[in-house]
Image 1 (cartoon, helix red, strand yellow):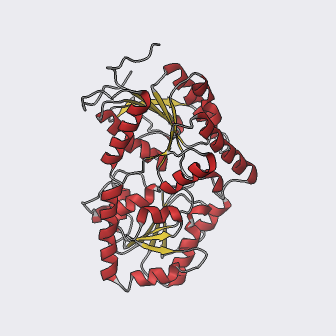
Image 2 (tube, one colour):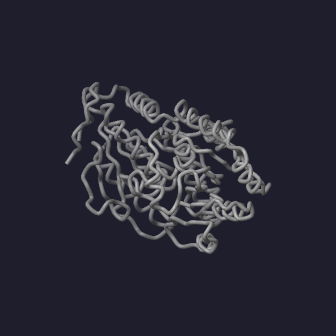
Image 3 (spheres, helix red, strand yellow):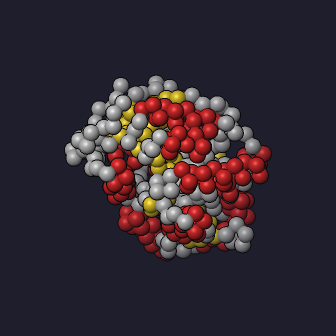
Length: 389
C-alpha cells in the first residue's frame, strides 16, 4: 500500500484502550473523547477494540471513528499484551500515518513499527509499575517496558501531566509533549438520575475509582466511617478480577456506605458528580486523572489525596488530605460545617477545568502535534469522514 498523498486525510490508529464507546476506564474515555474530535478536524481515525469489552452489536463506527474488533487472551497477565500484539500486527499491515499507543504495557509489540520506520507515538500514562496490585516481577516488567517504549519512540512521547513529563526528561533525557486530559463542563443537573440510585442531590459523598489499593478506596471508606458523618458515601467502581482487596472493600458496605459498582449508562455518572456534596479522590499513582478532572468539570467540591499529580491538576481549587496523616475524617467534618467556602471551591474547580482541561483545546493540540509529526496538515474541512468498511 503506498503512502497517502499530501491531500489525503492523516490516518491515525489508536491502540491500548479496551475500546469505544467507553465501558470501562480512563484510556477508554480518553479515546472516546479525542478520536471523534480528530475526525472533526479532518483526520481518519481507527480505534482498536477488544471484543469482550465492546457493545454486543459491534458497530463498525462511532461518531465517524472506525472501530476494529480484535481478540485477546482473557487472563489478567496476558490480556493487554495479547490484545496489543494483535493490534500492532493489524496496524503494521494497514500502515496508518501514526500509531498512537496508550501506555507502555506492551511496548515490545510495537518494535516492528520502529524497524519499518513508521511513526509511533506512546502516551506515557502514569507510573504503572508503582501500582501495588502488581507483584515484584510484574513491576519490574512494566518498568522495563516503559524504558523500551522510550527507546522505540524517543521523539514520539506524550504526557498528560507536567510531573510525568519532568520524570521522563530526568530519567531518560527526552521530554514528552505535554497534552493533557480533558473534562466536560456540566451544566444540567439530573436529580432524577441521582434519585434512581437511592441518593439525594447534595446529600452524599462520592468516590469514583477502580477498586485497587493505590486508589485508597478502602481507607477512604474507613476514614468516612470514623468521621461520624450520617450523610451517605457512594462508591462507583468495579474490579475486573476478584481480589482480596476488593473483598475487603465489599465487607465495609452498610447503610451509610453504598457500593454502586460500575456506572455506564449515558449521563448517569455525570449526574452523580454534579449531585454530590463532595467528591473524594484517593488516587496516588499516575498523571492527570480522568475522574479528578471530570469532577472539576461538574463543579464538585473536591477532597483530594495531596500527591503531586493531584496538586498539579487541582491547584488551590480543592481541599487536600493525606492517607498517612489520617486527616480525612477532619476534612469530611469540615465539609459539613463550612458551606460558604465549599461553594467557593466548587466554582473555582469548574473554572479551572474550563481554563486548563477543555477537550476542544486539547484536540487542537493533538491535531497540531500529529500534523507536525508527519509533516503535513490534516484535511482542511471539518466534515465527518465516512469510516472505512
